[in-house]
Image (cartoon, rainbow, N blue to C red; front, top):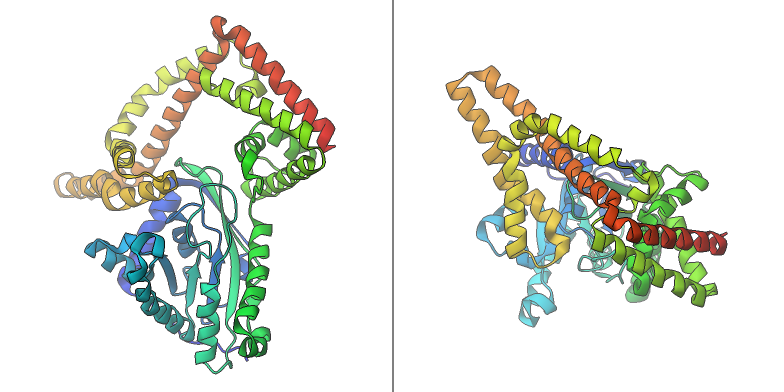
Length: 453
């Protein structure tokens, strides 16, 4: 029986805060967001457990929450983010619940998880949505870790409270980012086919753990099939680098994918990574040599402060000259833009360099600082002051122009880095090293073509 229950309604505060976070996330931080498989999401009122890979800390649940705005979302997050009383209250108001881990909070704190499990189960029996990350911690690579089965204990536990008369569903999903650490990049959310637990109820009554392990394998396989999973961790850096280079671009074009369209690019990258991993299984000696040369190529690019895209476009001396002229011409606009938006660039860097040790927290921290500090100081407060002292039209104009100024300033800084890279590429003293890297690159790509085809 599938019965649509009635979840709690969103408070006015939560609705307003969601709109504000949507502006920070979609309007400022990401340049493009894509959602695939939204038709797979069951209607609101269905007891639903959303399960996903976990690779970008708070950005992962935030992006899902901002996509599924029609339902009451509940998230389980690591307990240490609840330490601050103010954050504790705000996070709980947004539907977050603490998960205590032995490795972080100690054995004595584990008993506190029961209250979290009870709250999550109660949310499901009310027809709400609970989102969990079965890897129990975020990864620092495009790789799917082992799953714990706590999410299925919650799901089957909720079904048992409803006398196994109500279907509880598990929705596999994945998050994918074009870049983990920089603003103005792209992100993708994919939802797979929902998995009904009702067919497993009778098995669960007889053998609960075995049933949960069986369902867990199905869920994990579904998520792995949707995401970019680089299983060869020994050569992870080289594989991840190759898909980002001109070889990844060439592979996408030859196989009918759009390199600049993230959903299509993900499918191309999956295919390329699978091909590389199969090639290493079949021809380990040849692939080891290719990976060794790839590491040399990577080190050469880093030492010269250039990027692979320069070998694609092969700029001459005119490229840095034209970019330099463009920077000079746009400098007045950059100055006008950077004055009101500068704190969005400066404040996160100050805090991340001092407080954040785990690099996978960088983007989440940037979004959080922007939401609670930078945007209020840079956009909201000046707009209020303009409204008071200059009038409403000035305030409205500034408020609407602010995101455009931030985007202009960001692109100017990006253009500056490209200018530096193109200068390094055409320097006469670098010519010998550039030709060595060009030859090495051509040789790597040619050997890959021979093996992969």
